[in-house]
Length: 149
Image 1 (cartoon, rainbow, N blue to C red):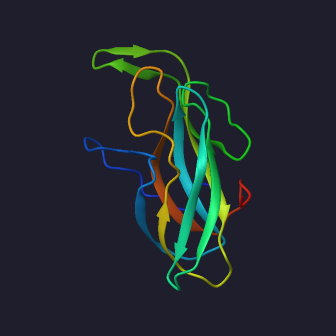
Image 2: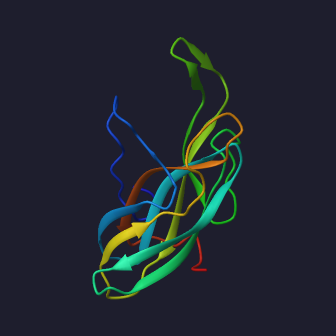
């Protein structure tokens, strides 16, 4: 739970994130905020997405995720969890703090979320390619970190 929103972390040994490329993700729920757990790769990653409600209305939002390796939040997000090291390869652990970030956007009062269209940041990953990794999305009742754009 971060900021009043409870997330389900991906299971170990299976794909654990999606690269934000404009995908539509089914999300069901209501509350005061829509929260994201994620991180940027090769720099801060940001973009604009859309929340679609069950009544067919939509709401644009802006989302920024700080770089996982920088271990420092950017405007609109905060550190959700930090590790003291990371695995460079299957047999090498590097002692350097890395982070996953939490960001949230306000939801319209009295409406139920049907889906979220992620920002289009990158269609893939690679050395030097800026990307936004999303680990989890959930509705909740915490303090909003980002404004609607």
